[in-house]
Length: 232
Image 1 (tube, rainbow, N blue to C red):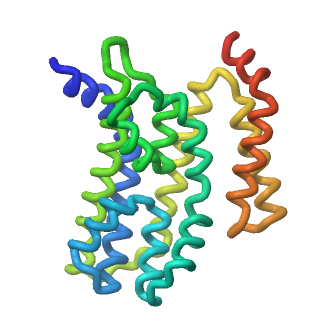
Image 2 (image 1 turned 90 degrees about the horizontal axis):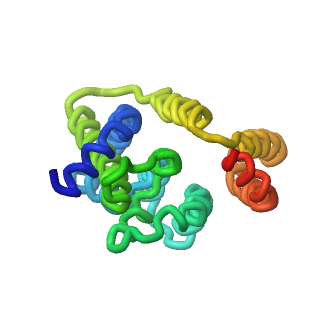
């Protein structure tokens, strides 16, 4: 078995939970694109090159309202600002991944980030290829879901209200898995507590960025304590 095959076999089981969510959410995006009159080409193009779930849904509205570069940039920054923090926290993880690194950075969605945080390749499995296949499989699921949604949208009228709850359910599953796997629960408790406080203070539409900033400060300040808990 060559290195690519072994890395793919190791990566696939870890992406199954993401697959279930991405196929459904991707389908919702495809249905939305179809309802706005965009063809398969634009659906695949968006899932291939934007590949930022929530921003893709926002992009549909931006396109239908008329494209404004400054507004689009600011909206993208607000919606996906959390990815800046994801990237910082993954710098050490992506070290030594060579030519795979640009794609690993591009494909760092919420769910892929969650999987990569806890996933470790088995002995003998190439780390770069292992993380590459996790990222690639997740994007393939999203693209396939988008195309299926576009196809279904052209055939059947759908009411997509409430379908985004799948993402919430997916996050709960990932959260529980991370809680069981982590040796230190301090970062999780900081994240949950900070998010609740910021949600109360800033409201539902503006709490993500201040939450991320405060979490980063707390985790940096308590890094030595967290390292001691992990080392036990």
